[in-house]
Length: 407
Image 1 (spheres, rainbow, N blue to C red):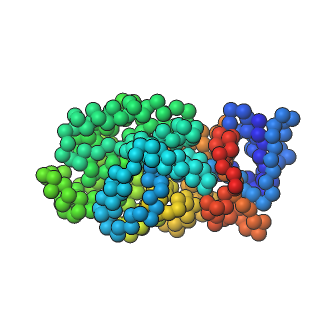
Image 2: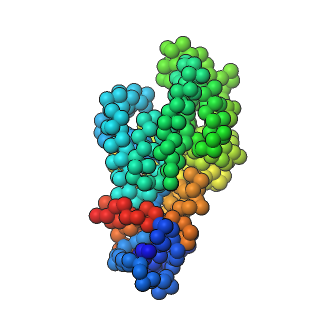
Image 3: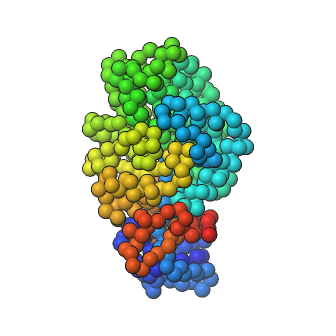
């Protein structure tokens, strides 16, 4: 067993505790949480006290692209479509082993910043393999594309083979999900079939949706860079009537309580109601949204309607370094959150967005012992200290009671 105590303990499900402690069993689960004197100290337990430290739940990063680790600063194109093509070219130069090492480094970088669970999207298969190899925690959504012009039967057969190859990595706390990438790269038929596959196998779906303004134009009147790209491939308008990207996904059966929508910037009230009605969650990446699109998602609307909202960093080639708390500070301004609500979004809110709230996101008996330790300053309120911190302030991270990072 392991017993940890610190100047402050932030359970998230309860107010911060001055001089708090947590007891962890040999399975990596929390046994007791509370004031130091109220938490048992078993004779055989290893104990560690952190003076001037804050213990809080491990952070939940709901949108990453860890296979792109190592590309920071290599694609600075101001136009999103040019940036996408640049990323494709960079990826073409990487081997399978390169992707795995990049994903492994990305997972370790997350741990070093206090993030214990990630939700990733990518098409190399490297992140689910790295999470498995490192005994990590997260959901890796494997991407599918057909660019609206490939044979859906061929596309789905290939995709099914890739999923079968990767499935053995989905063990322990690692899940394999599916990700029909975005409306400009995936046909309605492949969206429909991928959603059916996900329901049949009980796996989650991750999508990029309503991210770029040209994505909206693509479905409204078939104009913009994405429409130009598809038209050059011999593809005609995707819809007979103007429709929003979110409504288009709904039309193809993609929206459900197991669907995570990354970005969701260019949405209206009807879209938000659709997301809420289906129980979809949003992965909000404010710094990436501004970097690529110069726009903010309607976070306050999502919060007011009760759309589950998690925070994400996107990739380090979008915004570097990955800093989930910096994302939280920006989200706080948009949502009008208190410090407590913002810390909740970093932890339990992210867990709820991923459907993992029964196992992580708070410090409570029975939950996984996922914790991060950051520095404390006696002169400042602990929640504000957490929100003022950065990756360099995290000194120790535990995943399921196992130490995975220490400076």
